Image (cartoon, rainbow, N blue to C red; front, side, top):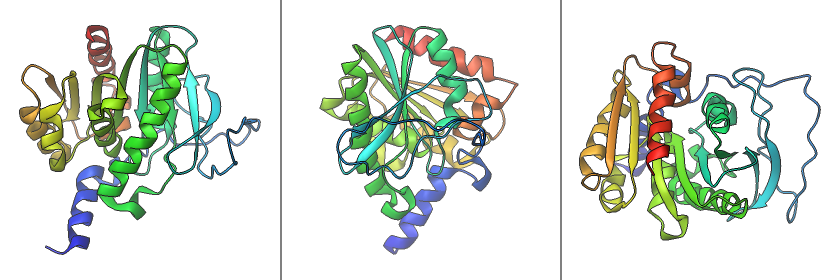
Length: 261
């Protein structure tokens, strides 16, 4: 199989369906005041965080940190607590996709960090996106540790779930656990087999490709470390928080996992 075909197939696997690649909740507020960002290093950010017009309001303290290749804009939420979560986006999603999850976690006393990739995933391909995304996520995790977080969980949806798994497997991550919504690639089979922290796989049962991969990764995860929870329907990644049939249960599964690590 030609390399181009392999990449295209992997992108389809990451996205699930075209309508389910982190598109929900991505409205931007046209009336929101401009945010002043304190830059660290040269102001190279060209993919800023969004000001979300829908979903639960989460007060983000926006910062610019030094990433592996360029500066990254991140958003920090929650002022106290030693437990934290870093959330990575889908292949074309934004921080707004994670507003329900972030709001719930902050209310429970967690610190949360969201960020925009400093690259265009479709341009780098799967392997490049996983490597670059991992290093960016580790940089965001390090910032949360500077905030006083001692138990850090890496989370994400679709591509972000794959990035979170890759980041948590890195010794520098100091990870306490991983949460993957609709995320994963068969290429991560060996990676999840070496993880020594809990992994929570969350997927909609009719999100066909994602559900199949989640099942295979769950079976390959180190014994006693993986949990797979399936929900009805075909929602993908952040869209799962907006399915009224199980949104409350979904957040409950995430809280239970975080409380256990």
